[in-house]
Amino acid sequence: MPSREAELAANLAAVRERVAKACATVGRSADEVTLIAVTKTFPASDVRLLAGLGVTDVAENRDQEASAKADECRDLPLTWHFVGQVQTNKARSVVSYADVVHSIDRERLVTALSRAAVRADRSIRCLVQVALDDAEGRGGIRPDGVPALADALASAPGLSLGGVMAVAPLGGDPARAFARLADVAAAVRKSHPEANMISAGMSGDMEEAIACGATHVRVGTALLGGRRAIVR
Image 1: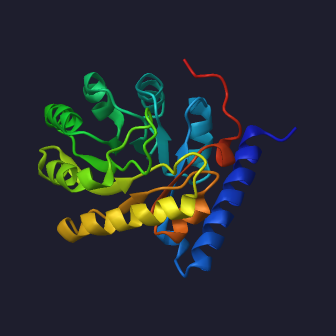
Image 2: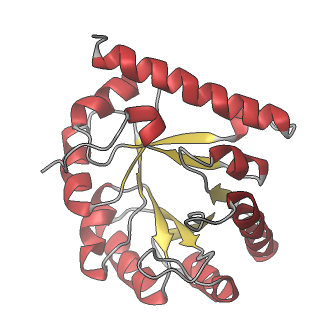
């Protein structure tokens, strides 16, 4: 049996090759795309191994797991991304370790995170999560609500507007969904030129996301394997 490090190294090489090929297909440089390793349900030891292999960006989606894992890995030079839905009462905890929050979908959350960031003397980069379908429970704000929320984020103390994020609709055409997200992102940049992040694409649809301009892809299964039991 190969070691876990060897397994992760092989997976990482395969993912990076996919990113490079997807970029080449549409005339982009692979350097334009940041790989975010989604390590939810996997132990901090995997985070350490990935960091040793050159991964610099790590994502989590549950505050309890994320806070413990980030604390255990606080000696590593990592950028921590929070990609799950944020409850306003968890804002203070999330701000304590997250450098980037991808899931801003309401002004009440902007207020809570801003307060927590100011209190902690931190600057948190935030993305507006865009809903590309009407599915409930996945978070996100409809495209017509994005401009006002982006304005609120851009003016909130302790926060900065990084751009937009979305998840492709289940069972839908990811290319079509990400093309729509690209239009939303372009509209945001007209008012906020610095908001150039497009967080889109996961293990199964990163190629379509990259073709539509994704700057950050969130990869879990293709990198770490099938999900394990929730880490406590």
